[in-house]
Amino acid sequence: MEKAIGEGVQFPSIPRYPPSTAGRLTWNASMPPLAICLLAAFSWWIFQSLPTLFQSMSLSTNGPNQIAWSPCADISEFECAFLRVPMDYTDPLPNETVSLALRRLPATAPVAERLGTLFVNPGGPGGSGTEYIAETGMDLSIILSGRYDILSWDPRGVNMTTPPMGCFPTDYDERMQEYKLHQNGLPFEMRATVGTDLPWFQRADRYYQALVESCARNGHQKMLKSLSTASSARDMVEILKALGEEERGLQYWGFSYGTILGATFAVMFPELVHRMVLDGVSHAAHYHENLFEWGRSAMDDSQKVWNGFVTMCAEAGHEGCAMARKGATVDDVRDRIEELLESLLINPLSVPYTESARTSGIVTASDLRFMIFLSLYKPGRWRQLAQWMVDAERGDGSAFILAPLLTDRRDMRDNIFHRYAARVGGPLTTVAIQCGDTDLSVLHANLSAEAMSEYSRELFRMSITGESWHIWVARCRIWNVTAIDVYRGPWSVEDGLRKTKFPILFVGNTADPVTPLSTAEDMVKRFGNASASLLIQDGYGHCSLAHPSLCTARKIASYFFDGDIPKHGTTCKSDSGFIFVTHEEAAERMDGLNEEDEDAVKALERLSESMIW
Ligand SMILES: *[C@@H]1O[C@H](CO)[C@@H](O)[C@H](O)[C@H]1NC(C)=O
Ligand SMILES: *[C@@H]1O[C@H](CO)[C@@H](O)[C@H](O)[C@H]1NC(C)=O
Ligand SMILES: *[C@@H]1O[C@H](CO)[C@@H](O)[C@H](O)[C@H]1NC(C)=O
Ligand SMILES: *[C@@H]1O[C@H](CO)[C@@H](O)[C@H](O)[C@H]1NC(C)=O
Ligand SMILES: *[C@@H]1O[C@H](CO)[C@@H](O)[C@H](O)[C@H]1NC(C)=O
Image 1 (cartoon, rainbow, N blue to C red):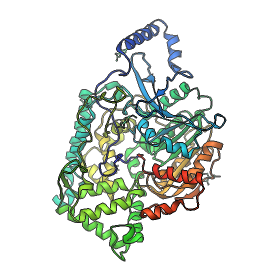
Image 2: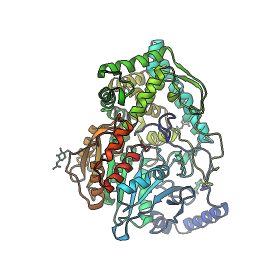
Image 3: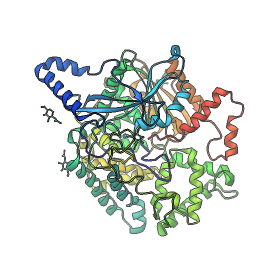
Image 4: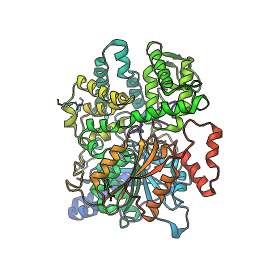
C-alpha cells in the first residue's frame, strides 16, 4: 500500500491504478442461467423449509475438495477455479453470493516435500491476486523450492470476482473519471502558480463526489457494503476449508495492504495462523480506526527513500546516474531536480503523439512529482528515472505523460475467460474497500477543504510524495458507504488480542516510501512477542522484494518450511550492485554463486519488478 497507487506492467511510463471492477453483472457469467435458476431455487427451498439446517450448512458451505480446478484459459501451467461464498456473512442468503476468482500454481517438488497451499496477496486494496500470481507465481515458487501450491484470488470488488461493484459500465469509463482528476495536477502546482491551493481541494472534492454519486446511482448497493477486509478474511477461511487445509491452518505471504488483510485475519482467527509473513507493513489499526493517522504513519520514511535516490545518484556518478554531472555532489543533484521542477511549473512540455506515448499532451511539474512518487517504490527503476529527467531537461517529456486509457470501451466479458474481467485498473476498488473499512466519523470531523489543504501540506512537509499520498485519505472523507462487516478491535495484546497459533513474521525495509519500519515495529508490539517477530531488511523501496536480498529470501523460506522464526530485529542487507548500476555491473552479481543461488537471485530480480501496492 499502499500502494503504489498505481503502477503497471509498463511501469512507470503508463502509471496504472489499482485494478477495479465495473459494469453490471449480477451472476457468475461462466455459469449458464438455467443452472443458476435451479441452484437458486433449490437453495431457496432448503432455506425456507429447513432454516436451522440451512443455518448450520451455511456456516460450512465449503467443505474439503470443493474446488473444481481446471487449467487456466490464459496460462495452462496455472489452475483456475471459482468458489462461491456468502456475500454477507452476517446474514448469508442463498440468492446473494460472491463468486471468488482463484488461481494457483501447483507445487513441483517431490510429493514428500510438499507443504500445501501458500496464499499470497499483492496489496492495494484492490490488487488482482489472479493477475499477480500469473506474473510472479513461477518466481515465488523458485524462492520456495517448488514446495507450495501458490494461490491467490481476486478479493471482493476486484477484477474477476463477481458481482462487480457496477458503478461504471466498463473499466474505460472508470479510468476516464480518474484521468480527469489526474489532469488537476497536485496542489503545490496551484500554490506556485496561483498563490493558493484551496480551489484545488474544492475541485478535488467534487471529483470524489462524482465517484460517490456514480456508485449511488449505478452500483450494486449490497456488494458495495460487502467489500470489507473482514469479509475478505472470512473468504480466506472458506478457501482454506474448501482446500481441506483448515486443520493445518493458513500459510500466507501478504504485501503492503496484504499485511492489513493478514493482520485482520490473524486478529479474527488467531487459531488458524500456521505461517504468516507480513511484508511491507501498513498500519492495520490506524487504517481501521483513523485514516488521518494512517496517512501520517505511512510517510515516516518516504523522504529517506528520496534522499537515498539523490545520494546514490551522486555516488554512482555520471556512468550510473544520468542526473549526476561529472563530480556532482548530492546537493548538485538535488538542485538540478529542483530546477527541472521549477522550469516545468512555468513551461510544461508539449508531447506529440507517438506510438510509445500512445497519447499527446503536456507534462507538468505535477507529472514529474507523481512519477517520482511511483519510482520510490522500485529502486531498480532509479537509473531509468534519472535518464527520463535528463530527457525532460532536453524537452522530451514523453516518458512522463500519462496515457488516458489503456483500453477501448468494450464489453467486460470480451476476453479469453468469457467472464467479467477488467483490462485496466482504476482506483475505485481501493476507495470502496478502504473507505468502507475505516471509521468515517473520524474523517467527517474534518470535512472542509481547508482542513484537507492543511493535512496535505503536513504530509508534504514530511515527504516530497506527501501530496500524492493525501489523496487516498481525502477521498474517504467524501465516501459514504460503510461495510456491514468491519473489524473494530482489539488491536493490541493489552486490549485483549488472542495469541496466534504460530508467530507472525513481520518484514520491514529500513527505507520504504509508504510502509515504514516504525509501522512494522508498532504492529509487532501490538501483537506481542508471543505472536510476532520482526525481520528488518536494510534496503530501499516498497516491500522486501523491491530491493532483492538473498538473505531475506532465505530467512522467509526457512520460516515457511521449518518454522524458523528469526530473532526479533534480525537484519538482512539487500544485495549490493542493484541500484544505479550498468548492465555489466548487474551481471557481476552472479559471480561466484552456485546454481541454486543464481536461480534465486534471478527470480528475485524479476520479482523486484512485480506489481505490489
Ligand atoms: C434474496 O432474498 C432475500 C430474502 O427473500 C430478499 O430480501 C432479497 O431481496 C433477495 N436478493 C436478491 C438479490 O434477489
Ligand atoms: C484480471 O484478471 C486477469 C486474469 O488473472 C488478468 O489477466 C487481468 O490482467 C486482470 N486485470 C486487472 C486489471 O488486473
Ligand atoms: C451517498 O451519497 C449519494 C450522493 O450524494 C447519495 O445519493 C446516497 O444516498 C448516499 N448514500 C448513503 C449510504 O448515504
Ligand atoms: C481535525 O480536527 C481536529 C479538531 O479540530 C484537529 O485536532 C485535527 O488536527 C484536525 N485535522 C486532522 C487532519 O486530523
Ligand atoms: C519483544 O518485543 C519487543 C518489541 O515489541 C522487542 O524490543 C524485544 O526485543 C522482544 N523480545 C524478544 C525476546 O524477542
